[in-house]
Amino acid sequence: MDEDTGHALDDPLRTKGTSFTHEERRRLGLLGLLPHAVTTLDEQVRRSWGEVRRQATDLDRYIYLRALQDRNERLFYAVLAADVPTALPLVYTPTVAEGCRRFSEIWRRPRGLYLSWPDRDHLAEALRNRRQREVDVIVVTDGQRILGIGDQGVGGMGIPVGKLSLYTLIGGIDPARTLPILLDVGTDNPTLLDDPFYLGWRHHRIDDDAYLAFVDAFVAAVQDELPDVLLQWEDFATPHAHPILERYRDRLLTFNDDIQGTAAVALGALRGATEVAGVPLRDQQVVMLGAGSAGIGVMEMVRQEMVDQGLSPDEARARCWVVDVRGLLTGDRDDLSDAQRAFARDPADVAGWGVEGLPGLADVVAHVTVGVLLGLSTAQGAFTEDIVRTMAGRVDRPIVFPLSNPTENAEARPADLDAWTGGRALIATGSPFPPLHREDGPDIPVAQCNNVYIFPAVGLAVTAARATRVTDGMMRAAAGALGDASPALSDPRAPLLPRWADVRDVADDIALAVARRAVADGVAPAASDEDLRAAVRRTRWEPTYGADGSA
Ligand SMILES: NC(=O)C1=CN([C@@H]2O[C@H](COP(=O)(O)OP(=O)(O)OC[C@H]3O[C@@H](n4cnc5c(N)ncnc54)[C@H](OP(=O)(O)O)[C@@H]3O)[C@@H](O)[C@H]2O)C=CC1
Ligand SMILES: CC(=O)C(=O)O
Ligand SMILES: [Mg+2]
Image (tube, rainbow, N blue to C red; front, side, top):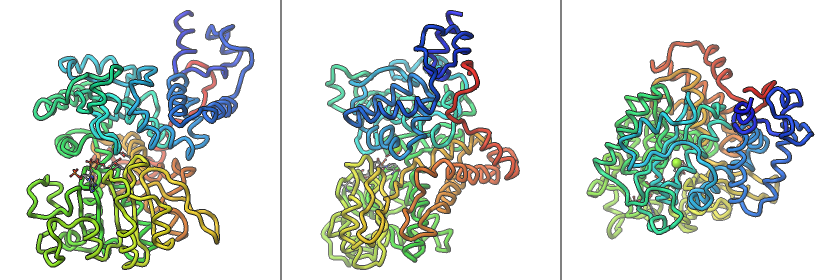
C-alpha cells in the first residue's frame, strides 16, 4: 500500500487533495493524511481563487497557479475554467513574459523535457525519460524569440508550459498527454549569461549547421518515440522558424504557431472587421509593420484570401505593403529572405513619393489609402497619432490591429486608437486591454487577436481526426470557422472575436472544420461529419474528479 499511497496523494494527475472521500481515504491508505473535512471540487476552486486574489502581484499569481498545476492538475484546470478572462492573462500573455524572464529565480519543480546541447548524443534517452508515456501534443521552443522580449534561453520553457495549459483548458487535450520541450542550445542574452542563478546551459547559442543537426536529431528522436504526436514549433527566431517549418511540414504532423496560428487568428478577426467596415479584404490596402515569422505568415494568408475572393496573385500582391525596421520591403533590398521577398514592392511603385531612402510606415500611410494596419513588430507605440489620424482621414472605418506581445510591446493602445479616430477604429490586440469606454452605452470589449483562438482547436482536431499532417487548408479552415463565429457579424458594436466565455464551444466548431478539411485533404482517415463531431466530443478532457481516487 505504501507506494500507492504516495501515488494517490502526490500524483498531480490523480490527486483530489481534500476532496478524497472517507471511503477513498481508507481504500487508498490515506486515512490520517488529510484533515477530516471532505470538500467538493467547487469548494476547492473557490478557495483557490481566494488564494489567487490574495497574492500581491500578477507574477505571484502566476507562481501560485503554476504551483497548483504541479500539485493538482484537475483542480488547476477547474480553477482556470471557472474564470477564463481573469486566468488567461495570468498563465499566458502578458504575465508569462515575466515568468520567462525570471524563470531561474522562481524555479520550483521540473515540468516537461530539457534537451540540452551538451546531451546531444543522448536525446532519445532523454525523450524516453519523459513522465508522460502517450503524448498527443508537444510544444517545443529554443527560447530565442519569446513573445516580443527576445532571447530568454532556458526561461523560454514558460511558453510551452503555458501554451499546453491552453491546449487543455480550451482544446480539451488531456494534460497527461501533453509534453512541453525546451531545446537548450545556449543563449546570447548577456544578462542571463551573467546571472549566477541561470539554470540553462551557460554558453552562447549554437547556430548554423550544428544547430540544424541538433534539431534534426531531436525530430528523429520524436519520430522514433512518438510517431503520431502533433509537434508545434513556438517562438523560434525568424531565421530558424521558416526553414524548420519548410523542412518538416511534409514529413511530420507539425505546424509553426507564430507563422500559421497567428495568420489564422488574424484572418479570422479580419472577417468581422471587413464586414463592419463594409469593404471586403480584396478591396483593402493592407499594411503590416514587422516582417518576422508572424508578420510574413499573416500576410501570406491575407494574400491567399484576396486571391480566393477573386483577385489574381499579382493584384493581391499589389494590395500588400510590409514595413520592417529599415522601412518598406522593396525589390532592390539585398537583406530579404525568400519569404520576405515575396512581399517586396517594385521600387517604381514608390519612386514618385519623393522619399529619401526607404519609405517608412508614415510614408506608406501618407501615400496609400490604407484600410487595414497590422502590427507584429515588437515596436511599442509605432502606430503614432499622426499615422493613425492620417489613415482615419482616408477611410471610414480604419482596421487597426496592434498584435505584438506582451502588453508593453503593442504598437498602440486601444484607448488611444479609439480617441484618435473618434471611435471609428476597428481594433484587436495581441495581449488583453481594458474595454473601450462609451458615454452613450455599455463599454465595448477589445478583441484579443491571439493565436490562442487557433492552436488548441487545431490540436483537438488532429487528435480527434487522427490526422497525419497539418495542411495550409486546415489552417484556412480554422480561420474561416473563427471568422464565422465573430460577434461583429451580427452586431457591429460587438468585439471582432468571440468572448472568452464561449471559447471552448468555438474551439469545438473550429476543430470540426479543421478535421473535416483534414479528411478532405487526405491527411486523415475518411469520416462523416457525425463521426468527426463525436470524435471531437470524445477527445475532449474535462477537469472533473472521477468516482474514485484511482484515475
Ligand atoms: N498576437 C499573436 O497571436 C502573436 C503575436 N506575436 C508577436 O509578434 C511580434 C513579432 O513576432 P515575430 O515575427 O516572431 O518576431 P521577429 O522578431 O521575427 O519580427 C519582428 C519584425 O519587426 C521588425 N521590427 C522591429 N522593430 C521594428 C520597428 N521599430 N519598426 C518596424 N519594424 C520593426 C523586425 O525587423 P528586423 O528583423 O529588421 O529587425 C522584424 O521584421 C512579437 O511581439 C510577438 O509576441 C507573434 C505571434 C503571435
Ligand atoms: C502569441 C504568441 O505566440 C507570441 O506572441 O509569440
Ligand atoms: Mg509565439
